[in-house]
Length: 613
Image 1 (spheres, rainbow, N blue to C red):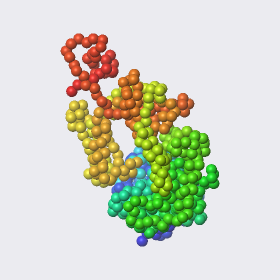
Image 2: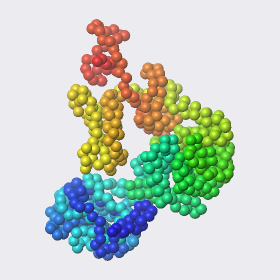
Image 3: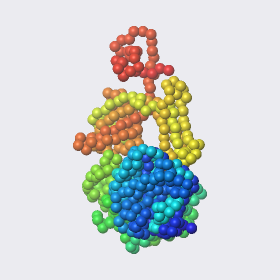
């Protein structure tokens, strides 16, 4: 039976232990792990009890019957790969002596890119060799972890915490270095930063718990039960308080610096679960987190509040919401939470601190109208430009929405709804960004015919094993009229975005076809630096008399911040609204549109074209 030991990718006994006696993990048949002649990346996190001799890590390698294909192994202090092109003969390539310590986990990578084989240890290059262009033998041996089939290389004495075979993909040196940093918890492990962080993960828990409280959905309850069981397993003492995983990736999760906003999101989720079904474990964790926030985590800077790297408005709003919900509960709750007088006093104290830092001069979290700023400090942060720009004069819609939750708790506690209605009105009126002529430096308007498609093909889930995992949407009329123009979307396992639900896959294909089957009205607009507040996906109403635009709504699909020129370029689009025209068989005048003689922008009247049909 398998034995486990502590790993490095995440806390706990996650690594598979090997005693050097030949015990191994295997998959039969090993054909899914054949590497053929294409690029590949072999990746492992492993440790060794000793660094003498040769020990197999993983491979498809059987000496008997000449069924050798490839095996990754350690040779002394070096990472090595043996491979065969005919099953009988073999070639070994060995890297540099970079594995220097026993009983220490190493990130071990071998990459074939074309005819070059490169080794990496802990994110650093560790030698290379030529592997030629021939295909590796299609052996019938099993895929084994920890031993080969035969006496060579020797069996592994140590542990494996992670193993992956990436066929058809040669990772770059930069990506490999990044992956080692991710494993150590030094870097966000997701292409989507929110997904790789505690805040994004715990917000998902909090929002699902909110949904469950409102609907009593048994499916949501089942998922939340798994969340709470996981919290029991990974929530750990941290001095006088508690800590939780901070970074998430394909390798697992790691702890990191305490984030009050993430902790408050966990508390909110636990509170909503308990208020709906009386879950004792959820109440325990809510109490632990609230006590820790109140007793141990408050910032001494600016006389209170909470901070991670800055005193963010959204972060403090989450903490205040948690204490407000604990004290006041929710209408329709089935079970009360046992709040304490200290909880109520802390909630009122945080409100007083928040209002004390209101005004139009830093340090403030609210302006004079009680609209939240991004943070308390009087600094500009350009580190994340152009994706995020934090300026001392700016707030964020994220902070605004979360602070609306605080205003709701304040109104329920004090009976004063003025602040709540002020924030709500601001959100409703400010949802549409309006750019008048006085806020536009330059504007170019054109019709974009690029990227029009008439077929969308979407592969999802385990399509490689089951070709039924496929969705398609087709505009047959357009296909017959001007031939196929297809868009292929990859949502299979291993892609940055994964889909499993067939109905959702078909819906996405249909929606994409609807969006991409017609030309787009495209605006390229330069505005002042205040345009940095506009985000991709926002709606913008543009007014320009010269272009015939009167508060015309467009969606933002691109944004470029020019710090030197102190301006922002916005790329805006909407489905083309084709104007109709009446054609008459008569000579034109200076006040009429003339016929277009050639279907090309080079025609003199192209910009005045209209459509008939």
